[in-house]
Length: 160
Image (cartoon, rainbow, N blue to C red):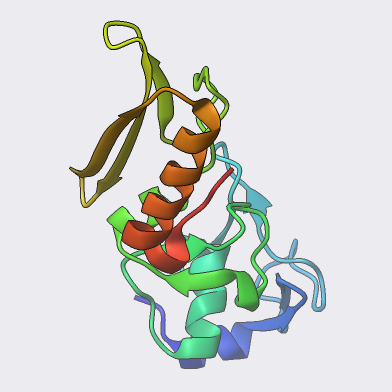
């Protein structure tokens, strides 16, 4: 495992990016942008024959440790500004996900329930259903969904 001391010797942080302080191979130039984008759309870097996500290296630079999970507050995996990174549990990260592409209502946590002929609001926390209710009016369902997410997800609540 890499240490904060090693990271601070290798990299300089500027505006959410890492830049090499040292040239440890013929293809690495001092002051050049470090890392590449992997197949999942995240920036990564190889250090001592191990691949690290750049947001994890940046978090370690500022906080001195590498937590198990790190959340991008704005949901953008390419925005590695230190202000956009926070330690999180897997459940907290799931609370901060964007609206699913298959969501037919266009509202996070709200779906049309055919049998009840009403709008269904569901909110999960730690993989458990913590709120469920039916509504005739979609605007009311949206309002209740937002309030329930704020209550159960706190600072990790995301509306869109």
